[in-house]
Length: 311
Ligand code: FAQ
Image 1 (cartoon, rainbow, N blue to C red):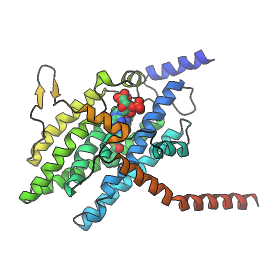
Image 2 (image 1 turned 90 degrees about the horizontal axis):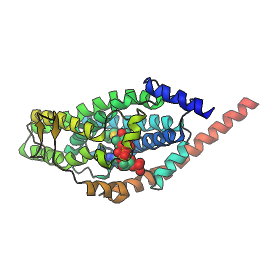
Image 3 (image 1 turned 45 degrees about the horizontal axis):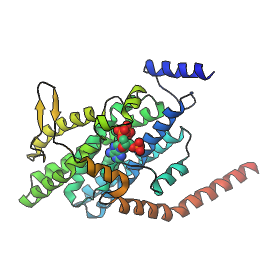
Image 4 (image 1 turned 60 degrees about the horizontal axis):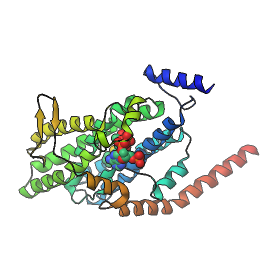
């Protein structure tokens, strides 16, 4: 029985077909997907914070409503992804508990502070840009619910990236102080956004298996160098620079070469010791506590509805 199931699963993967929630799947496949999809969901939810902090300080009503819409999209992405993770058999409560108790990871990038209005531009352009480069191939992930969730999420991320670039473009055409603020934001977010793709391939314990299962379609380094090539061109439109004098296209290898990234810093950040890790988690716990009455009211209402159906 088990052998037949494994054979059916292998065939699905080989044919580039999709694994659905009710299909048999090997436990390590379920485990790695639950890990990746829930980390992704946590990232969307924690990722709301740096931008939400700027809603009240957006420089115009129009900028404020755009930023609010973006942060709401992120909440939506988080909820989709928790639902996709739940189809693998772990409850939303359990996943949430893993986040609040610090047992679960979320993207390193959200442990850096957003210091200026220009950071809203840099986050949109670089952070959402990196997210898209990483997530477009995930639309073809072998697990159906994850791949399908990615399709809509990528569409919304494209809008997010455009709005970030447009913030920087406006600043790049502004006063000397505005240009300086934009360049400073780019300088601070460049390296952390390249680290979003994960550790170098030779230090990435999960990549090989995840690629064999067709969850990941490209390696961390492949996606990173593809992304850096994109932003190397786009930064010229802004009339700004990337803080990477070593950045160049290698004609022989046909790939972009960037400077060495600070992987010690990355390891510290993902261990929980980044510049604002504790602030982000504390804020999330507080929001969860403050939302208790909503959960209580929703379950009281559901119980009442169930009663009246019986009656
Ligand atoms: N941060 O063996 P690998 C967004 C961990 S976009 C923290 O290479 P894998 C949109 C990794 O989990 C951000 N941890 O792992 C937005 C593993 O630890 P574990 C979210 C990281 O899974 C924009 C260990 O290091 N996007 O939210 C990071 O094969 C603006 C070894 O690494 C996704 O999550 C990192 N950067 O590859 C929202 C995309 N990198 O679990 C708001 C989906 C690695 O064994 C505002 N995820 N680690 O203890 C993926 O594509 C993959 O999981 C990778 C990592 C590529 C992130």
